[in-house]
Length: 250
Image (cartoon, rainbow, N blue to C red; front, side, top):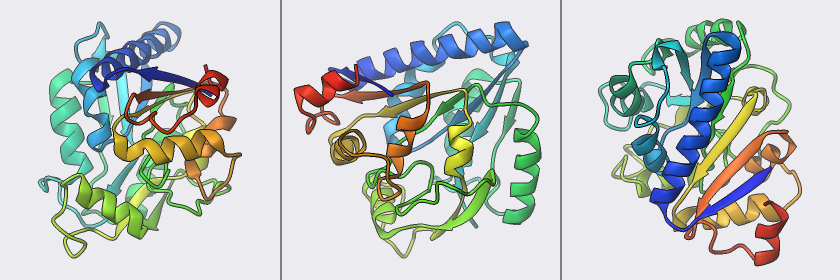
């Protein structure tokens, strides 16, 4: 695992997008196409602001995404389907994209997505880290051994609080309590991973991820076992890190 600390979220967005575009273009050169996996949420705004500006043949890119609330409509402002449609699909027009429909039968959706994912390895995963250090909606204690591609999960209280704090829902009564989430093992199967984690609310999660050994109580620590993972933090999300810890992950 490598850590890159940027002074501002804007610099973080630019640098992470440049690295991502490099991986995507390399995959297109090697395979004729690139498969990418995208995460959502407020922390990913800086990345999406920049990636569309870069020189990528998006017609040769196939997109998957990490998770979606069970029961949410595509029109709901908190829907990740809606998020990616407006911030990515309509902006870059990828050649293929597979958006999760939260209103469909979850098991049928999971079967369809699994069959598509099994066709070829995902070249690049953009994997956010939650305030409780979850990856996708794998809240602690996360199951690191589940070999399925996706599963239905019940969201932890801390996870619901993050969704409210980011402004997606007014209160817990409005929140959707379950989601279709990619499993930890399938996330780790991505050829390369970039984790974009700005903002002060993520400082504890970044510190816990880097300062601890791999444990399912801090799901993001699993990323340490990936052989090509880069975490991008800004000065706020890195504010709890010691100079020694930053140096250890350069």
